[in-house]
Image (cartoon, rainbow, N blue to C red):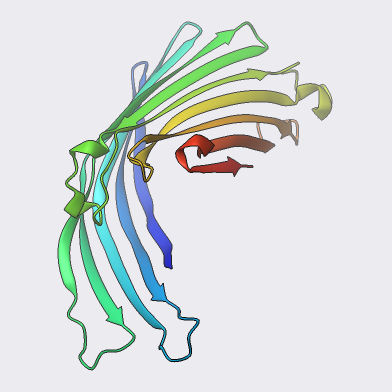
Amino acid sequence: SLLGAGGLDNFYLAFAGTVGRVRFGVASDFYFGLVRRTWAVNFSDANYTDTEDQNSTHFKGIGFHGGLQTTIKRWQLGVALGAPVTLNAETRLDYRFTVTEPTPITFDARLPLWYGFGASYQAGPKWLFATQYRTQQWSGINSTELLGAEGVDSYNLGLGLQFTPSFDRLRNNIGRIYYRLGATLNRLPYADVGGKNIAERTLSAGFGLPFNRGDSRLDFAVEYGKRGDAGNLAEETIF
């Protein structure tokens, strides 16, 4: 059997400001994480001994991203870009049956550049329409920098709308609820066992409940979708 666990996390520090009608933001990203893969062979015959090998890789690194946003009449337009990142990685191989301490292997892993843009349109006082697109060029990364995996150029396309019955703060909270619908289409950054791209499709619905007669609100949402294709050996339900 083969078991996988872990992932890459990050936190960031950001700075934002305004120059004329343009709003901008820049941020430094701090990446860290652990990916662990375990190979195990379990025998049903008592004459054989089970064995297990574990591959653990630690990552750390620093990156940067930023964006611009402006308002043109009823339109809000934005662009964002994240610089390529080189991560320091260290892999340790642990075997169940060994008499020597394993020597860690160090190498560089990479995260490719990403960019995206978005737009929203205020169609009157009650309706808001929005869309966004983001892509990342994983195919340009060598497999040795992706733990042996072959990357696939990924993208994310999202569409959404919002309806607000009233913005009058003197009305009760029920009359000022935000109602939202959305849909996404994604291509994941890896292929299936047959080498075919993996698509992900989702639908979502939610609402925002205002309180304190101000701009504060509680948001609730539910999402349903499919990842992969049963015809390509694997399909997963998202809920």
